[in-house]
Image (cartoon, rainbow, N blue to C red; front, side, top):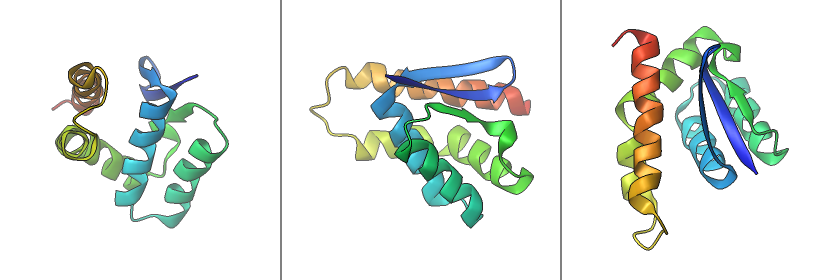
Amino acid sequence: MSGTIAVTPDKRWSAQGWLFDWTLESLARDLSDETARQHLREIVDENIGWLGLADLPPAARAEAFDKITTRLVQEADTDLPGTLPNRPAVLDLLRDLARMAAEARGS
């Protein structure tokens, strides 16, 4: 199973289900909006496999973009086990998400 984040309606990032879930759980930890945090956790718990960033409230969307573009890859590098198979490719995939988000924000 895989999951997809629609960074914008025409820019989508897809990953294996476990990495999609890890990404949403990481984002949820940093959101100040409790409803948005619950929404992300529900997506993971229910195996929905889809997050449209545009569906988040504006403040939560801004926080998610900030986390993705500035801290997500570093957090993954710290948190994911060194023995993870294809670890460099996993980090590259997260870098792709960060680039997509930065481009979407015009950074």
